[in-house]
Length: 97
Image 1 (cartoon, helix red, strand yellow):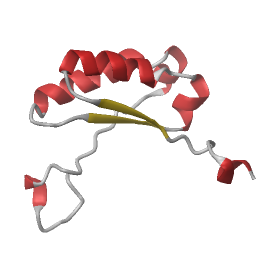
Image 2 (cartoon, one colour; image 1 turned 90 degrees about the horizontal axis):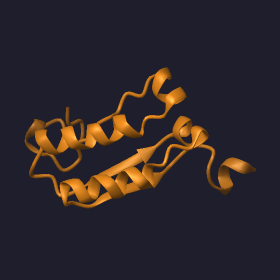
Image 3 (cartoon, one colour; image 1 turned 45 degrees about the vertical axis):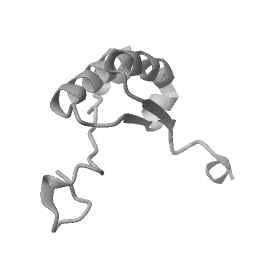
């Protein structure tokens, strides 16, 4: 659902977000394949999108999944920009003080 502006409903796709719903198994064995499959599915469901961003959270940073490699591979497959963003909560100066 698009919760950006309730009055516009789902006719505004500018701020739609999707989640990979990683489970414990994905954390243990890595979720690279699941992430790539999600991006491929996203491309099928929303072919008019202009790009994808991958935003990682703490578990992904801790186990070291390579979202940059997934982004490069997905960008070649879908021929659109795929931007990996490392935004784990433990990163940065503010989290280390």
